[in-house]
Image 1 (cartoon, helix red, strand yellow):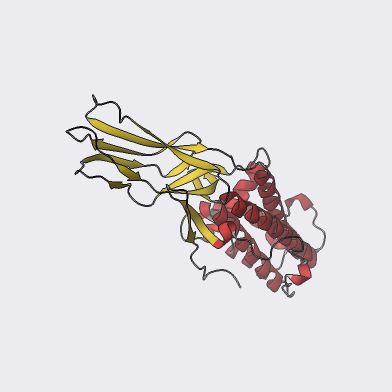
Image 2 (cartoon, rainbow, N blue to C red):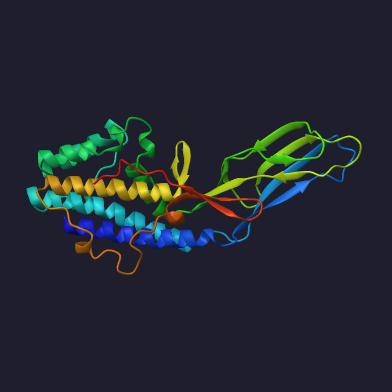
Length: 311
């Protein structure tokens, strides 16, 4: 079982590198919001204002390589754990290529793995394997961390797992200050993945009568690095949430199978983990995200405590 833990530890080490680079990237002037309006067109009864995202520095390609290494090692950790359980119970299997930790979102998808693998391990091990499946989730099994790992691993076999654009979150309305009363006709915010040059907010205001007036507009945007985690339906989740979820889900599998095998759970020191990297390096220094205000200042959004992390 030790090789499974070493694979997991190596993946975590890569995650720490990615997390540190993510924190450093937040401090880079990587993007800005460009305002467009028709203030000079007095013939239009509406004042139309739009903000577009301008990407000044894209996410590094190295992140895709790190993510690929993380996924490969996490997936291998699961397979190594099941292999160790098979060897301990029934010896070298007749079909080694069939010994893969199953990840199933439905009962039908688990039927063939059960036929191939259940007899190769102890009943307790197989019961544990089935209990850990995404299909046991109360809702949205396609968003279970193990299913996300399976899906991303398949993507990584054929192409880069890209950090998808940016996600703009509607936090507050545009703050408007004007010496005269204004009538807002429409306000719109984009929420979801965005690309360079995409509109992220727009505002339509009835043009004040009696000449021009000074408007102070202060929109607030929040941007997160995201990964696509499903294609049916298409879903995106923050890079931090995906990495943390996969790490903890695989850890829980290893803890469960190790205990069911009657072996002690190793400690971090025994895995020689983290000699070259920080001990703790959550993305954004432990924050869920960073709000970039119109004046360029940054405000962190603290991550909520996770009381469900496996011990």
